[in-house]
Amino acid sequence: MKNLLVFAVLLISITACNRDSEDSMDLSDDVLIENLASSLDAQEVEPEALPNAIVEDVSDNFFETFIETVEEVPSEGYVIYLADGNVLYYTDLGRPLEYQGDPATSEVFRGVHPHGRCFRRLIRFGRRLPPAELSEDVTSYIASNYTDATIRGAKELGDTTLVLITGPLVLAFDAMDNFIGEWNPLEHCTDRCGAVRPETLMTIRQYINTNFPNVEIRTYCRRFTRIYVLVRRGDARAIMIFNVAGEFLGIRV
Image (tube, rainbow, N blue to C red; front, top):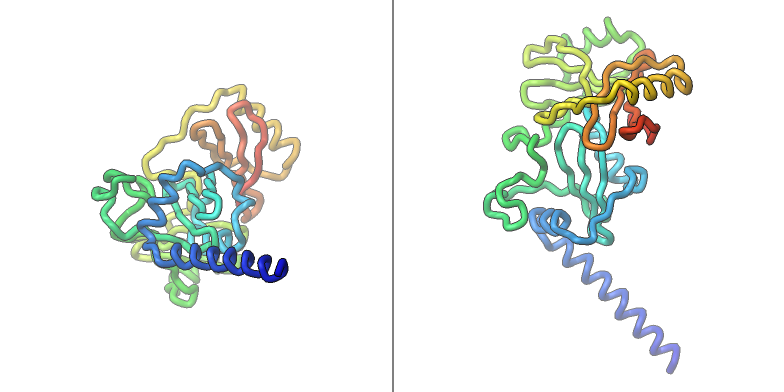
């Protein structure tokens, strides 16, 4: 009798969990996003805490930028804030969510687009391009100027084509396939970089020169309480993160 009771309890628990999963799958992306954005249980976590499926999706589809911060809503999903101003949403199982409705009619967003102020509704997040679809002008330029590079990915972002090559490094080309330059992952569509105190910048430079002597500092940007430093070594680039006191926090690639 006791074993039968235990089995019944387990069966009810499994059925309830399955029902919860099915209910979540039945909800539209818009509703799931609103639930994540309005949750009182959201807590900031490190990007390293993200499931592998989400890490791979962000790496494949948003290689031109990097993750600034992550919020987790336990048992529901994640909200990811990218350095370029876009905001991403995923379920706890790693499924990407995309808002399709009108934010003006949402009681949660009240006209502010859930994917961020930088989200462009016409081109959305851009379109991934198989490397085979790149023009000969683009591939020839890369072969001539980045001789040891391999093309790892590409995407159309409006009139701009972005190409990810080994390093990693992102190259930008215009609508006529002319080379624009190397993409700056610190660029934001609206927010300007805040000022950094000279003594803090000196502390950061000393830390980098001491611990990464072969690295070249290209540019830096302060946003809120963090300072992002774009560095390069050869054809490789990375983003080093410091707090406003100049203390090293981590690296994003």
